Length: 437
Image 1: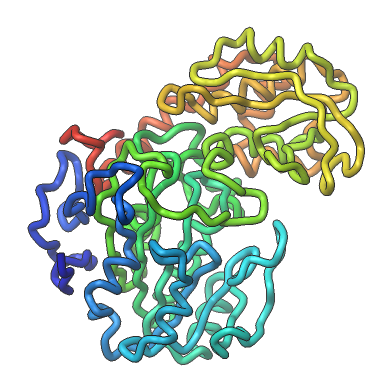
Image 2 (image 1 turned 90 degrees about the horizontal axis):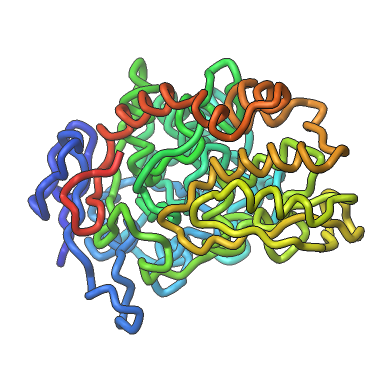
């Protein structure tokens, strides 16, 4: 199907009649136009077409006559695994003049908390500007200096509030509005589905680059849906001129392996979609003195520390958490915490992805680790508060609260976020006409 400009979502504009909106979807929300294939694994091409693939199939009509800069990283690829910057740079229909790199960099060479800096890309000769930890006027000044009038965002997210690419998106939206630039978001799947939001909602007093605004810890949205929410809820005073190119063929209940798309690690410690599945819960161990599995082949699935015995796996199993099993594990991280030392802990094995709640699981693991290991400690800077979005989780666990009590403490805030979230959902849930919320 040829995609024309009128089928692309424009803020305040209409969408094409590819399908009816699901109940609860906002007016002007994007809709899918059905699967490309029957979704079988042996299909000749992916069932899901990303925003970029639809943009390219339309001859880049949305970018015609524009001077374009792209915010992306190694995940910005076509369905046949070519990088979108290389593809657009070679196409005369696109005037691509700049690239903007997030955390880890445009080509993805930097570890967590790093970037590649300002350089000229050897493959294309394009100038690459560093956006990491830049926001507001300094980032707006970079956009102005680059000479672009349209900024395209295309990065694979993993569905967690503290994964920084969605805040790169927010910062770019805010800065583009300040600089008078237009911003186009090319949508990609939420790899852990968009069924539901889970976990605590950020208290604005704890805002940081791992959580700028009050959304749930596992937000259950795609980047384009988040962009619309950011514009509608948090940038009302000065919204960006926003357009999104939705996917086709993606359903809210799809895990990444159902899409047929190639997986590229969005960051060095996110090697597989399995990592993303547990990340929104087990990344909380970054706020403790335990290893979160960095420096292993299973980051965020392996957790541990020196002196931990089989008692942790036994205590976690006794929690009877849905969809997951725990195995006693021993491993030696090659970098990060406990580098080169053999430690004990657990490995998570998710056996039912649909019933698995990553945030509840992460809380239960924190509680049981503290109970069975007398060496347990929070990071001295209370980084756990920035990850959970407030001091509530830490103080409740310290006071001896159980898993149900901690999870119950955020129920009202989560319900309020789910209500707001529902207004910005744009895709159907499998064969069901109802949006999840």
